Amino acid sequence: MFHLLLVIIYLAFISLGLPDSLLGAAWPSMYQELSVPVSYAGGISMIIALGTVISSLQSDRLTKKWGTGKVTALSVLMTAVALFGFSVSHSYAALCLWAIPYGLGAGSVDASLNNYVALHYASRHMSWLHCMWGIGASLGPYIMGQVLTGEGTWNMGYGYIAVLQIILSIILMLSLPLWENRSVSDNVGVSTDAEDKEPLSLKAIVSYPGVKEIMVTFFCYCALEQTTGLWAGSYLVLQLGLSEGTASSLAALFFIGITTGRALGGFLTLRLNDTGMIRLGQVTTASAILLLLLPFGNKSAFAGLILLGLGCAPIYPSIIHSTPERFGKGRSQAVIGVQMASAYIGTCLMPPVFGLIANHISISLFPLFLLLILVLMVFMHERLLKTISKRT
Image (cartoon, rainbow, N blue to C red; front, top):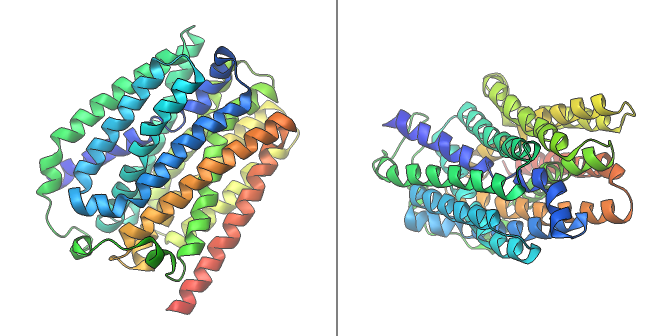
């Protein structure tokens, strides 16, 4: 039963990744058909992110009321319905409306499922499970790219992903008895007593030492990841002159890098702790951005996108996995909830900000924008470590 539940969680992480990179992959085709400026992708991204902020902040309450299994299954189903809505939409306004359930479905499942894994599984499992997210995030733009290069429409691409999400939501519904029958402790000896406590208020959790720092760190990481996922395709088209179909497929290199990095990262966690993994990712990310800044054309950009994915790979799962240790098991769900909310505020604000920069200044500033975000991330993570050191 333990191994079957782990397989179900792997599938759930794939479902989390499938829709995450679709908008960026499809947008070079979408904005022309919809007759809107290229920067309008930020509006849809903002609505999705606002929905995830709201549902992330409710994750502690919802998980304690319904359990991780039900929250996961219902959230994936909601996302599937939203993706189907995208597949039948032909106006920007309709996309904005369907973006609401899209975002609401993503936030709770992300926070709830990540906390469940942080509590019940070792660091290597967190890395490998987020590798599954990378597989989903890589499949999304790949499927969209294949549809577009095959002279299909972006609506068809969204339709195919919606079908996959519906299938995954059915599997999750059927798996609910596995979640309910799970024992109160696991192979790493973590008790679930914390899950029985009352939900913490937002004010109480944010005032705890180190929470503000980790919120800003997560804000920066997800802002960097989402900005890359949303604008890499447009950067390849508008700055490097690639075709839309080719750029859509090549933009998947970033997510392929994340997937590969997390697969390898599971083994590295046997030698490095969470802090070491985060620092390694930050150094690799800096190297990737420098590659994007070099004037060597397509090859430098392609290599930079892969290396950028490799750098991002260990940061997210290591931050999540370190949460129970840094803030206590009783606070972990609430802390992860506010981390997710902060992260999605980053995805809400920063991609649209770069959209405005691309529209009014130049899309060539894409690497510099990522570099500024990275510098702030590194600063706040190091400050977090000092805060925790003083607290202990």
